[in-house]
Amino acid sequence: MAKIDQVKVRREFDRAVNMTAAELGEWLGTDESRSVGFKRDGATESIGHASGRRIVQLLQKKTADLSDNDYAHMRKVVGYVHRHLAQRPENIYTSRWRYSLMNWGHDPTKEA
Image 1 (tube, rainbow, N blue to C red):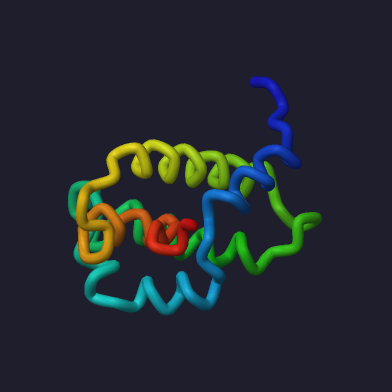
Image 2 (cartoon, rainbow, N blue to C red):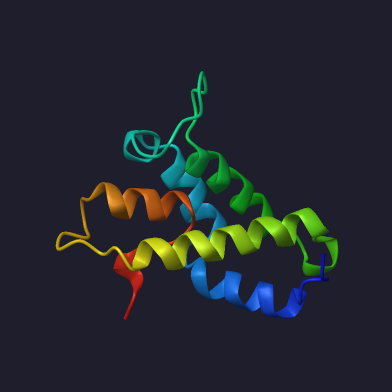
């Protein structure tokens, strides 16, 4: 497997994730956050919600402390955000679409 361009991945991650660690952490504590997303068999937490917890940790790490696994997750986040932004519904404010994106660190209402 080819080595990933960490600078590029970090730049794309920083563009895709527009919530701070504090904002995301607060969001993850809401009923709306827990109400969306795919749960694997027997799981009590959705994949997106678990990703959000990981994103909070990534946002709090220094770049020098990021591991290859961290960069792999950052790439996953970027891909998810880009795919789901393309599915924009009419109502972006109270939609499951927005809530799911926010679990992955992106609040579409913050876009210019």
